[in-house]
Image (cartoon, rainbow, N blue to C red; front, top):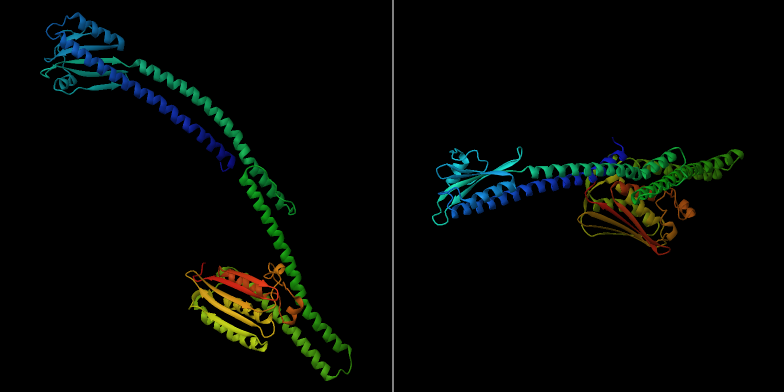
Length: 466
């Protein structure tokens, strides 16, 4: 019952059959109601005409009027009924059946009619209409008597029954046709999804290099395209993972190789001068420090890859955080003769993880200092609106080639590998920064031109979104 085909089959069947059922029922019932209303209207009109004829012919003084009796029998013949003419004393002057002539009638409806309240009673079960029509004097408005009329409605009932039968046959035929159509169309409707299921099953068996191609509805094609995009993303992630593992292995192995080469060189020589020992030991210490920095950056990256539940969110002053970061980096800027400029347009208090955001901003500003020109500058600005705060880090440095800007946030990616190694970079700083910003539900953008400088813009929500 949870099958899409079963659901679509029932949906199509019901959508097709319910309107037909409703309209068929409505048409037949409308005919039935209208036929009864028209019959009542016609009988009331005949009753009024008969009442006028009885008064004008003096029927209450002489009930043998041939004209009046002929009209009474004519009406009863047309409508298959019975008419009783009753005077104000409840005497039956005329019964078209000839049964109650001269008798007295005791009827609540007749008495009410003599008092001015006529009645109409419709019995659908026994198929007849009974009504009382007052015979009122035109001048005095005195009720002289009552016409008690009882007419059959069997012909209406017969036509209604016939309509119901024909409608039932039509409904049943239509229902069968709709069901057959719904059955086949539901198969056509679900076929692309079955093909899509088979294609996904093929992928789970390991055939990841094949694209999913499923025809049919536009939405199914969209799902197919989205699935292919997801596959491409998975392939890229797998490729990135393999590249990352390769890069990590290479980056960790390089300092160790250098240490081993230096140590072996010392061991292979006898009576090595103390100056050479010192020089080699300094190189070994630098390689160990480089290895330590790579490991620390990797640990930072692993921590940032964890879920947002590891976020330690507090409300802090971003102005003070930036001033603290800049204070730590001023010695590096001074050493490289870089002017460090800070601009704050307004006080900003935001909900952030102080450690992670501090690490992200430190990496951006430190990179701006390291990859700068001689006697250059680094400008850091802070601004905010009602929803976000913005940190912009601009420099007068060497810039980033346009073709490299899409890859600078990838792990271990270096624009200039030689200069990066000389400056002590590991290729993980911008990746760490991007992860930290994204964990705050923020965004980071870069604008750069070669030999003209680089600008990084960080946007972070003032209120943390869990």
